[in-house]
Length: 151
Ligand code: DQA
Image (cartoon, rainbow, N blue to C red):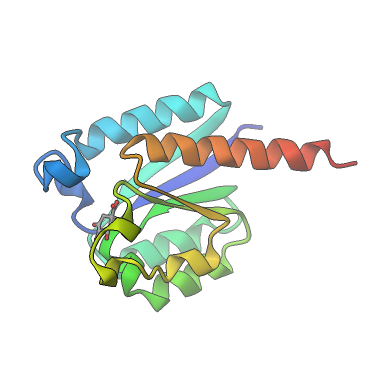
């Protein structure tokens, strides 16, 4: 059965295309989601993309992902740097979590250098723009293949 991946985007990412294009590029979230869904299909996965500006909604989606989704790819946006609630919810999720950022958060203001989400993530992809979501799916694919290979 195709692996199911929940792709979550946090606050202000619904404004991509208009939001600081010099940092985040000109693609809209709808365009990025479509490319991510196509990349998932190409890897034999199913990606479901959701965005919310509300921390609690993201927490609820992560809780509900348990037992249904095989992995979570998350760009928690500004909540990355503040949210113990998201860290706790992701810790509860039994599958792999991949953290994505469009920009290289380590090259930016010091307050963006700390990620609470990383504590629950298999790894982080940052700085490659929208292609980061596809790289996250590739990382999951490699991970699952490596485990299948193990006797
Ligand atoms: C971001 C980086 C965060 O620091 C910022 O608050 C965002 C987007 C990124 O994708 O580069 O909203 O997560």
